[in-house]
Image 1: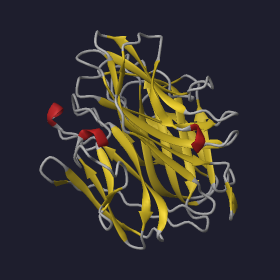
Image 2: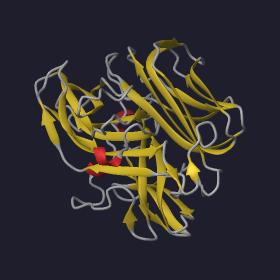
Image 3: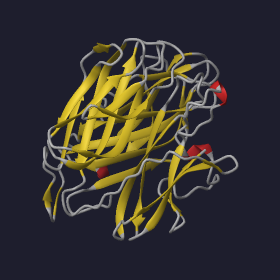
Image 4: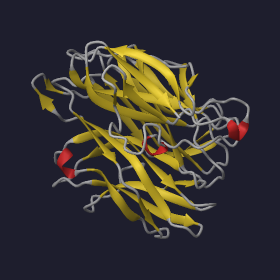
Length: 371
């Protein structure tokens, strides 16, 4: 979707590595994800962010996003724990925040929960849309141009039951972004994203134990009738608990926007990397953002099922990556991709989301690339 006179977005990339031996409940600052200068005091923002983390050996670490000047944690992002391996894993958060007065930078914080080695924080991304922005075409209007819903209550749902139902009153093509954080369950917990009662996407978190707390994230453009519901449902055989879920809808049909979407389901192996295909996009020669979502394949071969949700986006027409365009460590270095863990079994269907930004021409070919 190209930037318009009503949509203002910012994208910031983290290209450093840091580590800490701080022990829970103490979280140590690991670096800035969004500079204060990219926000306006009092404005409301939608955010999608991810960062790669490594816990050595059998260690476990926790992650959160927080305002650096004492403005508090980003709601729903705190205590995302995972028992990972030394290859690393990504942690993601989708949500909403109000910029404090004066504005504060948003940092990534880590803590060591179990194990002896230091917790490492690697590359990542922070993408935000200013929901309070007023441009030449006016201001984004809640309930017309966008809408959102956040639920921080503790809910336990069984198979087929809904965690979150959100009515969207602005019909047409909408960008839907959603997240849910399941806790206190040793299973991956398969979650379904539904539009008007129809399953459109599914995925699960990585888990090794009931203590793992990690968000399952979704994104896609869907045709939605006014008054239809977007829902997050439990598709796991067992009941599971959540204390955070969020659904965001951005109306792509309100002029003067251009939108395009395509589900990529094919796989092409390219000697250590692969592609999920391409899509020709009319970006009207404008600075644009492209949202890409991948999901871990279920192949029935357990730990050898690969990392197809470790994704990136490239403008083949301009020969430019739309995320981490400068890649001194090599185009397919894992630093530049969300580190989706190998499945322990076929129940692990982890999802990942990246946002590519850059100038897109009238008919540029955009490719989704994966490791």
